[in-house]
Image (cartoon, each protein chain N blue to C red):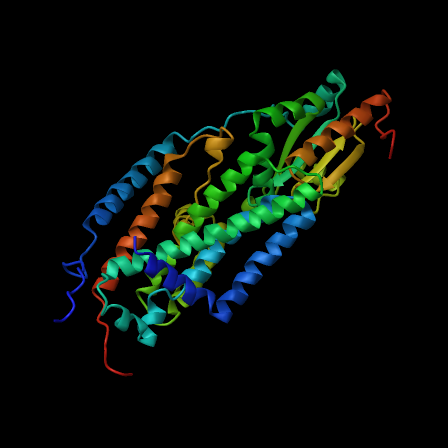
Amino acid sequence: MPPAERATPSGPSRRDPLVLWIVAAVLLVARVATGIYEEKHPPTKPDLMSWVPADAAPAQSAATNKPILYDFSAAWCGPCQTMEREVFEDRKLASSISTFVVPVHVVDRSREDGHNSALVDSLQRVHGVNAFPTLVIVGADGKAIDHIEGYPGAHEFVGWVATTSTKSRLVPGTPKPMFP
Amino acid sequence: MNRTLLVAFLRQRFTSPMRVGLLLIVTVFPLGAAILANNLATLAGPASAIALILSAGAIGQDVSSGTLQLLLVRPVSRPSVLLHRWLASVIAAVGITIVLLLLATVALLAHKTQPNALDLVRMVLEAACSAAGSAAVMVMLSTLVGGIGDVGLFVAAVIVTQMFSGLAMLEHWDVLARACNEVQGVLSPQLSWAWMLHGTPLSWFAITSWASTVTLALAVGIARFNRRELSYAAG
């Protein structure tokens, strides 16, 4: 007697996935609808960093006795986006930075617009910015105390800001770090 | 779920010297960079590349070699074969990414740097989404052409999109720039999970874009595969 045949799935082997088509169609409609909606009402990012305009920063630095942190970045720069996500959009870290420094966001638009504003060009030239992100801490007299090229990681970055700004305030009126 | 289909596909992929070589290239360098820089950020990218390497030629290569004709003699449906190959690529890509993250975490701990646990979770979730997206697109392309012609299609699409994107930027053609951006999103679908862990605003457009790209790619892939005539004749 031949062995009994094993049960095998029956039905067509080329069945079109109707459910998948319906889900895909619904998602496509939702994609268009949400795209149109978010074009008109873009989701707003939480303003966790109190960015100060570059031209107002020296006065605020003098008034609060805090050094200025220049964050030189660009929209196309991947590490800048990582830093934004990990540091500037983190409530705790953003608050820490604002405690120590007057933060200034300087965005390079030369790739998108073909040129930068005169102020951005001048700041980049003065601080020798060749790569993004470049982070510079500047004393109230406008002289750079320390700088970093590249994003070193969230905790390293905040640690650097805290250490450098504390050093700069140990000797009032002297932007030079006490322990170079 | 058919475990045999998953295992057989992965065994086929991991016994190919070319694929293993490419996998080493796209994993060892980011891992080394993460250890040297003491930062996990460089490990955000490999998942998509791993998924592309594993899913390239998922259907087309077996059609050309005649393996698929033999497989389809078995009681398995064509949609099932395609979905299992996509799923196997995603599982392997996520698994390799988790191993990379664990190795990098151990290295960081040895340097007395403690990575953020929530960031590790976010990176795994983002790796899963980009792997699912890239594998879906590549499997869909592999139903259109034989061999590993899907790689050619993918590379050509990326190059043409980059060229048009550069032209749009130079000429300030916003509509073309937007279109290129959408095509780039379709070619490498990604989804950020920062909204869940870092309190950034939730974009429903980003979620629906990723999900619709994955489901559409799979649906088109299955529809094309179902209608493809496979010759059992030699040659």
